Amino acid sequence: MSFGSASRRPAPDAVCPCGRAAFGVCCGPILDGASAPSAERLMRSRYTAFSVGHAAHLARSWHPRTRPDEIGVDDGTEWTGLVVEDAVEEQDRATVTFRAGWRHGRERGELREQSRFARRGGRWVYVDGDVD
View 1: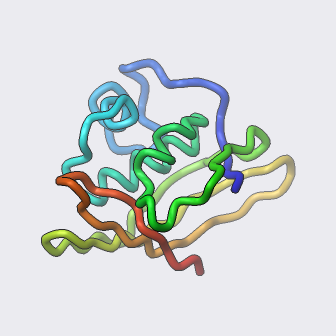
View 2: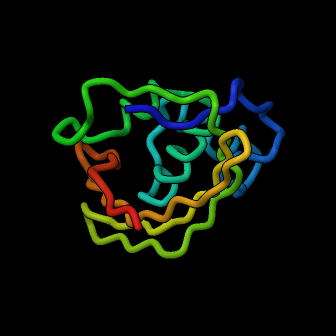
View 3: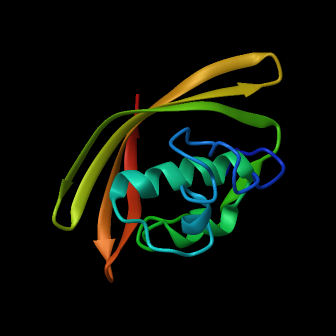
């Protein structure tokens, strides 16, 4: 499975690719292994992982029941922006609906997904999603 990436990790004080705050206080610690405090924050960190090519975080944050055998990133795709439309959290389950813009060469587009998350061992993990 292949996704998009940029080629490097942002500086701690740079705006996080997810657009929420500075990378060093936003998605950076989660990519480094800290537990995401909510399903929305995990989804944002996964978007950031796609943006910067952090396949290890994608694997670590994916439910083992639904995780593909191989997780890769596509250096030819640039993720250009994230909009969280809705986030609903209920105890150990959650859904997050988002739109993510992308560019690949001259092509541009937008991915819209309603993602499902579960809390496993006290940590949020991505289960699967429905793409529009």
